[in-house]
Length: 268
Image (cartoon, helix red, strand yellow):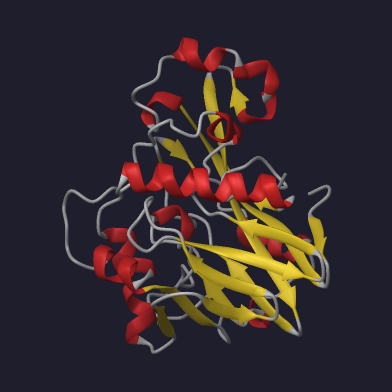
């Protein structure tokens, strides 16, 4: 991938992708019409395939002070998402970028939706972590919310049972209750709304700043229409408030924004 490395002071960020999915934008933004999206086709052509939204399944590795933190693990080789077959490219992208799974120290899960936890467990097993030397970490509120059986949950229980619950059973899961430093200058901060325990990563080195926003921001259009309700937000009002706060602060402070679903390399 071109331009896949970003240096934030002494922190190196490598952009990876688990592929992408194509879907009607009204699936995620049901209060919109195709006409509302039409003026974005020319502004952000990389985000669309015809009238359908092309959503990247982005993953980032942050290297700082001799530690490697991976932010989310994509959807994995688990079939269709939003009606679109996924390509499960993350492990290939690891190799292309000279990265090794056994060099990851921390797996940071911004939240527990299926497209952010898919490679947690080696898909050829049921209980072997893909990142064998890593601790896996997520906010306690997301663990409490998503591990309770719920037939009406957004993705169903299968992804949680396959990719999340085994982490506790094999003893590699750490639950966060608030702001947590994961590496030098890499700090997890609560940003609830999209899910109860959604977290972002603040990157700070010298005078340079970046923030990995997870699903606070779904696409560039969401940055201009920050009040646009997103179907998968657990608490739409809180998600909207957090989105305003994060983006306003980033603009004010000149902070680079990294997003899970922004087109590769996923920052701007």
